[in-house]
Length: 85
Length: 229
Image 1 (tube, each protein chain N blue to C red):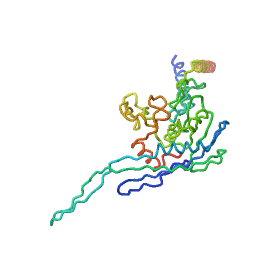
Image 2: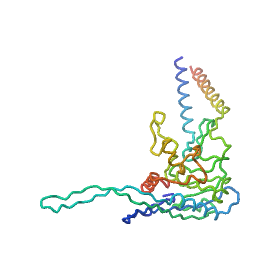
Image 3: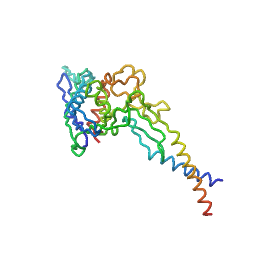
Image 4: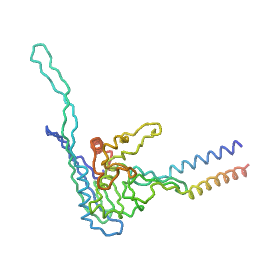
C-alpha cells in the first residue's frame, strides 16, 4: 500500500513538473499563457482582444485526456513494478 | 545589444532636463496580405512620438552652501528642493525590410503576422526586441484610429508591465508588485497606455499616455541594459 502511494506521488510530481516545463507564460507580454501536458488544456492572455473572442479557454476534453494518460501511466508503472517482484 | 532603444543623452540646461532617447526598428510583413508599408511605418512613428514625447515636472534635491560672513562661524550646506521641467524627446529611425535576415543588431523587429484570431499584438517577452502585430488590425493603425497597440507593445520591450495586473508572487496575501496600480490610482490615470486588454480603461485611440514613474523606469532600464534582449 505504501509503495503504491509512493509510485502515485512520484508520477504525480513528474507530471506536475512537466506541466510547468512544457507551459508557455507569455500573458504579461500580451502573448498566451498555455498550460497542459501532454495536451494544452488552459490558455489565457492579458493582451488586447477584439470583442467576441474568449480571453481564457479551458478545454475539458484535453484535461480529461491528460488525466487519463496520468492514471494510465500510474497503472502501467504499478504493473511493471509488480511484475519485477 | 540586440534591440533599438538607446539613451543618447540627459542634459541639465539649468531650467530643464532634456532626456534624449532614440529608437530604431525595421518593419517586416510576413502575413501574406498587402499593406502600404510606408504609410504603416509613418503611422507607427507618429504613434510612438505621440506617446513617448512628454514633459513633466519632477522634484530635484540640490545641495546649497550658505556662507557665513562672521569670523569663526563655519558655512552650512543645506538641501533644497526645486521643481524642474523634464522633457523626453524620442527620435525614431525606421525602415521597411523584406526578410528577418535584413534586421540589424541594434534595432527592434516589428513584424506583421497572422496571429491568433482576435489578438492585436504581442511582444516576444518583457524587455525583448521583437513585436508582432496581427495583420487583421493593421488597417486601423494605418488609419490612425489605433494609436495604442504599438506604443503599448513597445512599452513591454522597455520593461513596462500592465498597471492593472499584480505580478507579485505573494499577491494572494496582499503584496503588490512595483508597477501595479491600485484601483483608485487606475481611476486617476485612465488614459495610460499600459492597461491590460481586460481593463475597462483600455482604448485603441485614447490609451496613449505615459506617467512619470514609467518614464523613470524605462530610462533606468535603458541605462542599465535591462532591455534590448
